[in-house]
Amino acid sequence: MSGLNKVVSSYQDAMQGLEDGMTVIAGGFGLCGIPENLINEIKRKGTQNLTMVSNNCGTTEHGLGVLLPSKQIRKMIASYVGENQHFESQMLSGELEVELTPQGTLAEKMRAAGAGIPAFFTATGVGTEVAKGKEVRQINGREYVLEHAIGGDFAIVKAWKADEYGNLIYRKTARNFNPLAATAGRITVVEVEEIVAVGELNPDEIHTPGIYVDRVIQGTFSKHIEQRTVRPATHHQGA
Image (tube, rainbow, N blue to C red):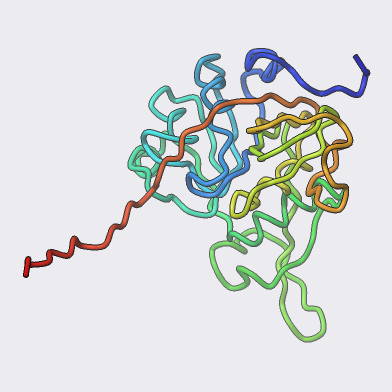
């Protein structure tokens, strides 16, 4: 087996090295493209005092929300509360430290970390609570707030396909925060629906190069819907 092979056979091996107090960046948006089995492994391990960085915290039953009843998350950095009553109640009670961050800024914080950029200026949030305590600078006649990149001890990612070297392809809207998260972890772990041999992926279709990826595991997934909306039934009278 090549030393470049990133494939691991168990979720325990995939999350080896995760310890209390670490920062974990998680891909996904709502329940789309979330690394659900890696999250469940964190739940099983019982790792505590985590800082989680993700667009939101899933729901009460799925995604990062499963870590809230067990109080495994100390701080959540996210763009919104979402469909999660545990998140809301723990935030309002002070049990959970929450840093709400504009969505585009959060994405850029991850991307900047992966690109080796320690900080950047953005107009988003100027004049609001978001800018409180941060440096604001005028550039070309407009005010910008300084935001710092955010990297993690671990990044957990969901992709569609990977080869054994960790090159990744995402599928449709699951290509949301995942490519950004994949670059921002000291250890990046990816779960995928299919693993193929090296050379089977078209190089022009690879979204994340394997250089960013440390471990890959193949899993099985369920499609959960955050808000199910259906059209009212139409009743037709017979002739």
